[in-house]
Length: 147
Image 1 (tube, rainbow, N blue to C red):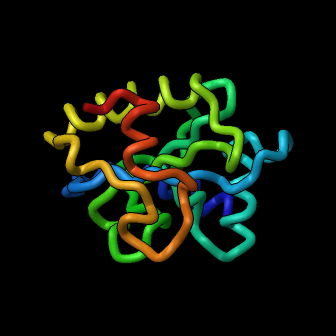
Image 2: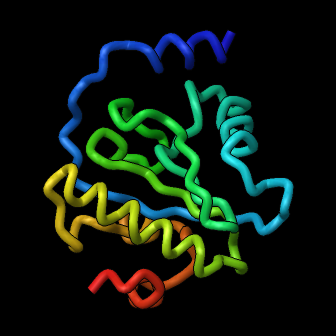
């Protein structure tokens, strides 16, 4: 039944959202079997959510997987979901260069699409009391060459 609701929402007329932020997360697991958005989707559906909370998921090899469609409100950062796009990198202590290359390209595309600047990109921990994504903003900037 949950899948049917997700499928129905996927094909609803696309609604325009006012995107003000891009929020970066990590999955908090380096287990190889968790390196896929289908696993995260299952975790979120098991919580009773409508779909995976993130709009994008980046696997260890840098492959980009699509989660919720961008026109749908995410479920990844309480208080910011309505006006943000959520990106999750697979991993905790083993984030890889391929992932940072992909996230840098995705951030650039999203910034252009929504008219955002570098100061519209946040780590989850900057907005909520969490360790996610397990690095400082400076470390993140250095890894993706955002400046």
